[in-house]
Length: 203
Image (cartoon, rainbow, N blue to C red):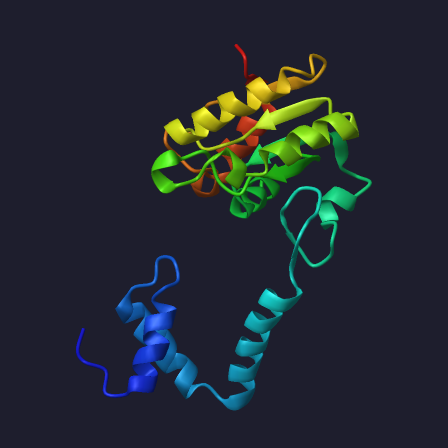
């Protein structure tokens, strides 16, 4: 990429390029678009980002992003509060919700066990999940983690933690999801069928 003639513009490009999937050329296009936008559009953009950081919460129950201390899914009387679907991140909550096939609630781990990436058991919300199962009378835990080695390792660890609750059914999504795939990239029909046709984990 050619040298940027403005240090201020270069700083903006450098910051935008820290976003996932944004290279320097894309960052330059975004920065120039913002520079050329009118004051009200720019203020609205900055205001939305400021509000995102200042006003958004993580649900104290499931750890999904929320505008309120308890998210709308957890607080909905239409959801089955006795079935918990365990996912890696917030994007996977949205992916499963888009299938319109699941009416339980969620638990967001915030990642999967990955020693190479420096992510250990204590970096995830596994202990909070176990506490929920104990306190809330959960009847089924669906393990919907990525079909990767790290995802499977995390599934096995969670299953072992839940064996102290013999009445709790532990299932996993059907392997309509290809090995190595992340849920957020799966098509809605396949993902929806995988939720509906979930299977016992321990088998």
